[in-house]
Length: 153
Image (cartoon, rainbow, N blue to C red; front, top):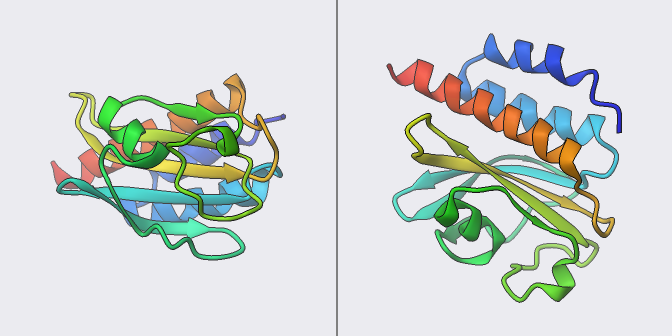
């Protein structure tokens, strides 16, 4: 996958406020990466992840996810990127869409390691997410966390 568009896009995100940057990120990721079938950002409120901006063919019923539940909750609890190559083989997966085959969840964290939320992406392709996806999404998550920090300092 060619991600040459990503660096200028990340620079563009840095010029935006947090809410607008999140909205632009989900829309652009879904438009630019063919194997991303649903893209959402969850923000941490207390001990729950609450769905914020998203882009995809339909809404998910999972608008609030407790930390520790599902793949999203696991990524927040463990403060790390989680990739599931086959959601049908992972009992932790919270089913959203029958077509989903794989998922990647990347936490948004402050430099001090505080989880702010996460980027959640589903794909209709099995094993859709590789090292390039992870690198791209972790860079976008880092950028969004920096914007969040900038607005609150």
